[in-house]
Image (cartoon, rainbow, N blue to C red; front, side, top):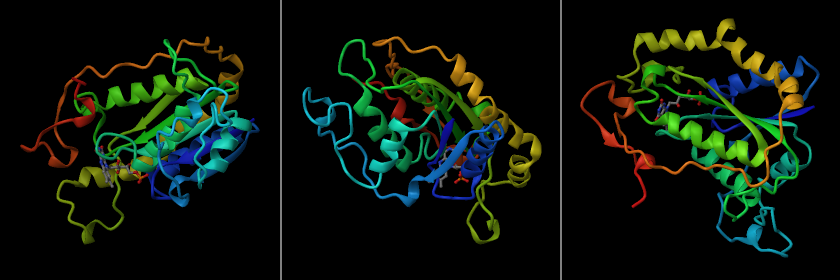
Length: 259
Ligand SMILES: Cc1cc2nc3c(=O)[nH]c(=O)nc-3n(C[C@H](O)[C@H](O)[C@H](O)COP(=O)(O)O)c2cc1C
């Protein structure tokens, strides 16, 4: 079993990378070969909408035609991976820009332009997503993050066969709080930072990685053409995470329905 960890945080030793590593260690403990890739080490763009991957009979049908720093990773996922564990901090209510660009390039070539949509990915693999974020768990729904997690999960499951996610809330991101203007980061957050690295918290992603082999074995294939991509129909007023409960609020752009 070959499990690829993909860190979408610029920080190689931050919350996200740490939790992805815990999940990989869990997979290693049951014999998996693992590798961790840091997206911020690679040079690449998002999808360029060239539609070469959708051109029937073309040499790039079902594959991304863009050649850049992402190409070897995309090839490795298609040919070798039994599971991929993605990790991203939440930046302004969504994945980091690097993670989004990576996902566009990974997912779009396999999505058939049929109704219902189908997948061209040649195998069935397990995908997992670890999200880390500053806000506490009780605000996740109010801020509309649950819709984002569900959208990623639905598309990944539809294209690759299986998807699940794990969240770390209330994380702490500053090692040098004295030197930053960080009025909204309280003492409570400093303490929760320690919690993240505690053995109890690390156990969850570890066990998650540990169970991969069994879940891959019992995973049932996705019937062709059954991919379900939810339409964005909700409008949510979201309080910006940094406002610390004060008066700043905004309409979350990624939740605004299409007109
Ligand atoms: C540019 C930027 C935007 C962020 N936006 C959010 C956000 O919208 N919601 C949130 O809960 N945390 C937000 N955060 C906090 C990070 O998601 C959080 O600290 C995360 O655990 C950092 O992960 P890392 O240690 O792997 O870099 C933001 C951080 C940065 C740098």
